[in-house]
Image 1 (cartoon, rainbow, N blue to C red):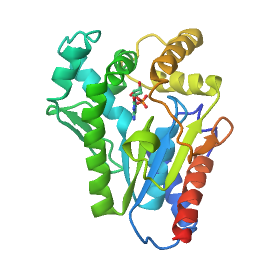
Image 2 (image 1 turned 120 degrees about the vertical axis):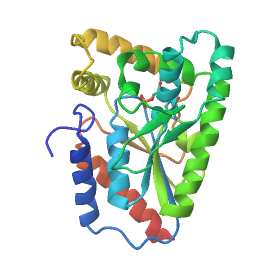
Image 3 (image 1 turned 45 degrees about the vertical axis):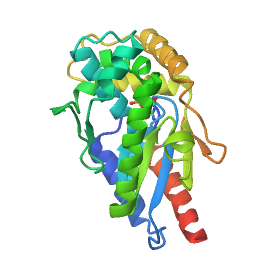
Amino acid sequence: MAGNIASVRHSAAEIGAAGRAARRGGRLPEVAAALVIAVDGPSGSGKSSAAKGAAVALGLRYLDTGAMYRAVTWWMLEHDVDLTDPEAVAKHATCLTVDVSTDPGDERIVVDGTDVTASIRQRRVSNAVSLVAAIPRVREHLIAAQRQIIADASAHYGGIVAEGRDIGTVVAPQAPVKVFLTASEQARAERRTAELASQSDAGRPLSAEVTREEQALRDRLDAPQTRRAPDAIQVDATLLGLDEVIGRIVQLAAAHRSER
Ligand code: DC
């Protein structure tokens, strides 16, 4: 597959194909027990594509925790809640139900009964979500939901690949396989530009400079949440293709299973 993972936006079909190709590689011993894989890293490093593809390859469920923070943020924007008032945001957020699909082939997220799968990718949501994600009561509420989803997937589907910022450190520190995915600023900004260009409501394309500035601001705001677990394997995706990153995660899962 052409292009490195961090600077190219992959379609769902490409991610599924890469995942299935890795599965056909036949490197996996039989499933013994439920497996939880934590994939953390900054925005634009390609962790969603890699985590989803690895879930397809390994026959596991997939959880995009960033989508949950985005869904709550979308709801706040839609209901004109003042995002600079943490009390108000937390009061509403803790009453919201966020239903997220864990099927890696069917991305879907519903907040308070509204399907927001597409709307959560809007630029207005991307630029506001860090504020919402920084509020401790919002995090507690969503982390509890994420732990429940991980427990259900472990009980009923053999495990899950969960991606975000704090999966390996806070949400599921017990996960036996942890990856921290990074990429150069430039590659991440290119990926974000491609992502925005693919959205129908994106409006005028952003200059590379504006994209980089927005990314730098998000990095700063997300920094307290974005933590590498001491036992996480760091993977620099700057020059790696999607299938190579999926292959790394699958290898780590295989190594863990053969140790058991
Ligand atoms: O990965 P993403 O860009 O969709 O994440 C959206 C926002 O949510 C981002 O500002 C970081 C935040 N986030 C978080 O604080 N903790 C997570 N586990 C996942 C995302």
